[in-house]
Structure formats: structure tokens, C-alpha cells
Length: 364
Image (cartoon, rainbow, N blue to C red; front, side, top):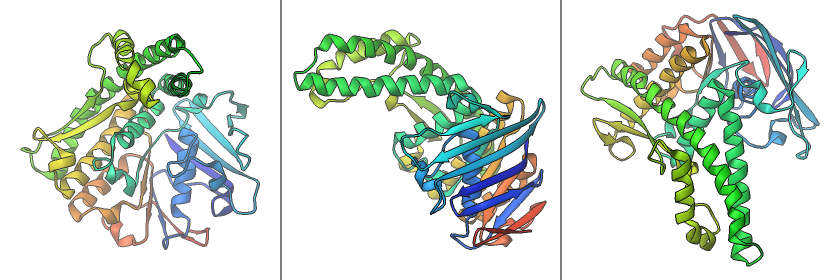
């Protein structure tokens, strides 16, 4: 898979951009604030339908414009896939998405047409932040691998929102407890499917990340393990979720929120059996996140049959020379877009194109 064309209109700092990127490594260089990350963000939007930086479409539209367009054409084994995303400044309007000229009824239908793995400085916080950060990472990775996961995740989130709203009404004496049953059943059904996907993801990516960690660190004694953590322990997830929701019902009504369920899931990273969040050095944590991202690249290639795009947003300067060299050596295996302020960070890499970004103008 490779991007053959990128078109932007009124997106972030760009009024109009159209170019054909190299099939290899494309470097976007320039000062901070020049608009380098905006280009990677536009690719991410055409892969997942959302930004990795903001949940508000209005922030993605160039100042003074009413809408923005991101359009990418990817060449795959089965031909060209052109994804076009129209962003509106009106919060009441949903994104307008077309694939090969056909307007999509649901955002999930765009999943899988273009795939990417993004590595940004924020990812280095994966091991330091709370469970929601790692859960979001897992959800975004799985949504690209299988669109069914995205739909189930949406159903679960919708049911959870409705149940929490109902809990507030029950606490206020406006509704009855028996009305929770319908939402409990929906959470149980969707939660069971999410559990199955997430367990498989963790068990698949853990050995890949373990091998990558050993290669990067050159320390075979340091064994990285990634495991799925959930309140749901058994294979009969539906029944266990229903039981858990029933047991926590009184507390849920009291605190007006749902305490049991897969919305509390997490990924645990351990090194030599010790949880990395509490015991690992900063260097070990950076190595683990780098290993995770490269493992994701391999896993997605195995699952979808093609290597996804690799987006590296200003991470080279965050890595020491050893980790930077390993990452650079891995870049020639996928179409890669790299942002940096210092081109010497790419010393030793086989760069195919350098684009200098200045005032949102691209200079080759």
C-alpha cells in the first residue's frame, strides 16, 4: 500500500495543497509551527475518520473558511482507493465521507481503505498515563484491522451513555430500576465481542513487541510482556458482564455511573515480570513504546495483507542514537512520512524526498 496523491483544501494552515509523495521515505522538515504535523494529521483522518489531536472538526478548518477537505488516493493490490473527507464548521453536521466517489452512510465503511501506524511524542506517554490512553490506542489499532470492531465499539459506547443517563434519572426518582435491563443486555452483548477482539490483539502483539524490544535493547534478559487487563475474566463474557452489572447496580445508582464493564479495560506492560509504569526507566519505556509501534506495523501487515503507512511525527529527536538508528533501519519497509526540525536526525536513512515546509508552503 502506498499513497499516490494527497490533496487538501482549507485544512488547518493549508489553503490548497496537492502533491504526489514518494513511495519510500518522505521527510517533512521545517520550524515548529510550520504545518508539518498538519499533513500527517490529514492522512490519519483519511485512515480513521478522525484526528489524533482533537475531537472538534472546527479546529481542523482553516481560519476564515467554512469547511475543509482531505483527500488521499492509495494504491493497493486490488487497485486505487480514493478517500475524501469533508469537514464542516457546523457542529450539527457529520463528516461527509466518500470512497471512490461513493458517499458512505457510516464512518465505519471507510475503515481498511487506507491504513496507518502513527508514532508521535504523545505515544511516549502510553506507559505513564491512565488506562484510557492505552484503551484508545487499542481501539484505534483494532478499528483499522477489522471494521466490525469499530461498529461494536460504537454500540457499546452508545449503550453505556444511555445507561449512565438512566442511572441519573433513577437516582432522582424519575425512572425505575427495571429499565436498566435493556442496557445491561446491550452492554453484555457488545462487551463480549470487544473482549474477544482485545484478548486476541494482546496475545498477538505481545510476542512481536517482545522480539522487537530484545532487538532494540540488545538485552535478552529484559523480557517485555503485554497483557490484556479486564474486569471480565471468563470466556463466558456476556454472563459475567450481566452478573457484574447486577452486583454493582446499587453503587451505580448511588454514584450515577457504570462501575463494571470493558470500558475499564487496560493493557499492562511488564518487563521481567515487573510493571513498567512503576519500575522501568525512561529509556526502557521509550524502547517498549517503539517496540509496540513496530510490532503493530507487523501485525497489521499480517492481518490486512499489506504494509500500512508509517507516520513519524517528530519522534526522532525524542529518541537516543541507538533507538533512532533502529527505527531508521525499519523505515524502508513501508511508505514513511517523517516530520523533523533537524535533518541530521535522519543521518544514515535512505531518504527518497525532502519537503521543506514554511508558512504552509511546500518546497521540494
